[in-house]
Structure formats: C-alpha cells, structure tokens
Length: 166
Ligand code: ZN
Image 1 (cartoon, rainbow, N blue to C red):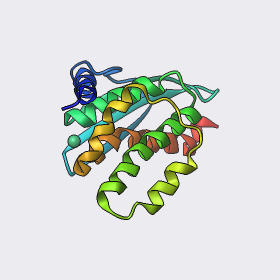
Image 2 (cartoon, protein in one colour):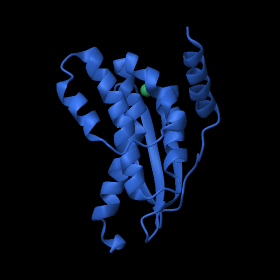
Image 3 (cartoon, rainbow, N blue to C red):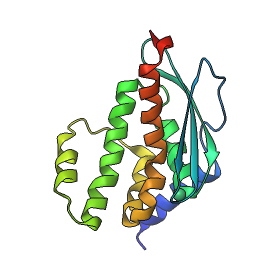
C-alpha cells in the first residue's frame, strides 16, 4: 500500500464524512437535476444556480449512495462552484477522461478513449479529484465516480434548453 493511496483514501473519506455544499436550493430560481446509478443504488441530486454571465453562483448536493459516489459529488460541487459553465464542462471532460483512459487500459480496446484523452488540450487542475484516480482499478465503481458529473452535464443541458434562460 503506497503512501499516495493512503492519502487518496483519506481525501475520499473526508469528503464522504463531511460533504461539501450538502443541501438543497429553492427551485426556481435554482435548477434541479437527478442522477441514478442502478448498478450500485447511488443517487445524486444537484441544485444549481447559474447567473446571466454563465457563472455557477451556487450548487448544492443531495442524495445518497456509496462513499465513491458521494465523495465524488462533494468534490465536484467544490470544484465547479464559482466557475463558469464552460470551465465546469472542461473540468467534466478532464475528469471523465481520467476515468475512461484507465478503464480502457483494463477493459480492452482503448484506442478511441486514448484519442479522446489526447484531444483535450485544456487540462485543468483536478485537485482533490485526483484522489478518485484509484477508482479506475475497479471498473464497476467508475459509474459511481462519474454519476455526479453526468448529472451536472444533464443539468447544463436542461438549463440550455429551458425557456427561462432566454
Ligand atoms: Zn456506488
């Protein structure tokens, strides 16, 4: 067991026990999006406020599930709060490529995933999210780690297509 893995585990446990931005926001004006991972029973509910300039002014996380899904949601909320929607989307790509490249290494045909990862030239610092890198060794848990990010993407898509953002 390496020291780095111990550190990563501590970060994950810290976010699980003391989740950041836990709670709900009033809807509207906040937007609510919900994600579910049937493989594990994880549920993530995101409440997000995006202002007219495209800044994520506030985000709250609700739901329940395993330590990976809930700590990933906590880290995600801390990472995107105060960022622009564009930066949040870039961070989503960076995080998901970290998950997919390694899953491809484990799972077999990695040619496409590798190409995707190399195409991302705006690598953003992942901070605490680096702690989830070890999850890729357990492919069944990758959906736990990416659930909150997929739900965030869903929230942005819904916001973009909802009439009250005009
Ligand atoms: Zn899970």
